[in-house]
Image (tube, rainbow, N blue to C red):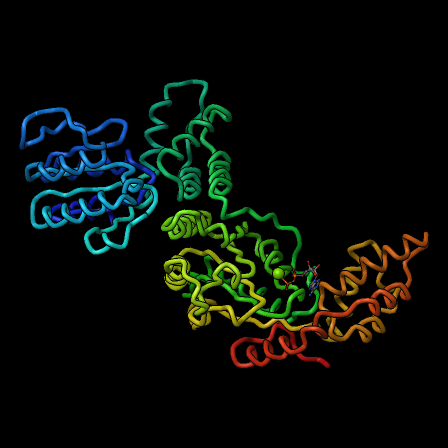
Length: 499
Ligand SMILES: Nc1ncnc2c1ncn2[C@@H]1O[C@H](COP(=O)(O)OP(=O)(O)O)[C@@H](O)[C@H]1O
Ligand SMILES: [Mg+2]
């Protein structure tokens, strides 16, 4: 929805207090200015440094200098102001922890309700005390839309067109890519990216915008660009999962869209530790040739209550702005721990962040392919498993005989050994119950053994190393069979059964 229109509706409908979530005070102020002009209201802005502008006179009492703290004075001014005024308070959320401020805002909501007077609180983060939830409406001021970005680029172009040292002519395709890549940035960020591009490249190019985005991803701390390191060829076994993934790749194309296929939503990989879930996640990026972002759910939970939801929203926005892309969430259950009735009270923050995420998964229209992994199903909230969240849930089990052969070959080859020189079939037979990670450990351990003794690696080294290790599946046999039982009815097997 158009934010201007929404603001107009709220003002017309005499909403008392509106909390606007945005990093862009200038854009919000411009929007309020425009609406006020149209509706013939007077706009006053307040910030802690500037005070109230333009100044409002206290309507009652003698004109004496006030002894009230600035934030209380601001609310008092709003309280006494005549009708047909609109107030915009900047960064006011910091004061909303004060119980006096909360109380005053509640009084104010009562007073302003039904009056032609609206108070806007603008802040980059949503931080609403529960007491105020019923009195304040929240408006998420969206980042610049493609048409806004186009206007902005065009104004830069016309501003510098006369400068002969700059080449700012853009073909319509270049314009389109520029607009697409700038989505998800604030107007200020776009401006600095464009300015940087002009300084460094003497033209407007996409690289600088991508740079700006990487910068943001870095700053937010909860997302990380993940370079594509390996592809599905490095994954042993898991044939059904790999096949499914390869088939889905085509659904990202425009042709698939025209055919009526929606963008793939994502996949959840559940299973035994060390069997290649994270490995597959990393490989998808290279196989699909899409950038991958890794989300650190732990970091989404900011230190301040209320910030977490914002962080989650910001992470989602950034991911969407980079679409098509892959969003990897490793060990999902850890991030959302505390969800499953353990009674751990974080005043519902986890639950709210989680529901923000779930809603997004359900409703997202942008091609952000989610790859989530989990080791422990008991900690997973059941809502996550409902149809429509993921395209598919796969169960990743311990590798069978054939898969272990493949995994031995992959790891021997990766360490510059010719797998044909080793009795891989025998080794695979002797390592029933070993995970992929453990097989890798066997190879690495055996190499160390041989190197220590100053000779080339032999099958015997691998065999000895295998004997020396106790696979997790032996110590965790019960957990694994419980997991299998669980997966049987809820997940799709990721490997065909051969032995
Ligand atoms: N199926 C497999 N094929 C090849 N290597 C594997 C496989 N499974 C695990 N590994 C090796 O073990 C390492 C750890 O596995 P990982 O993917 O992190 O396990 P998980 O995420 O399932 O706990 C991988 O980086 C890889 O080197
Ligand atoms: Mg893992």
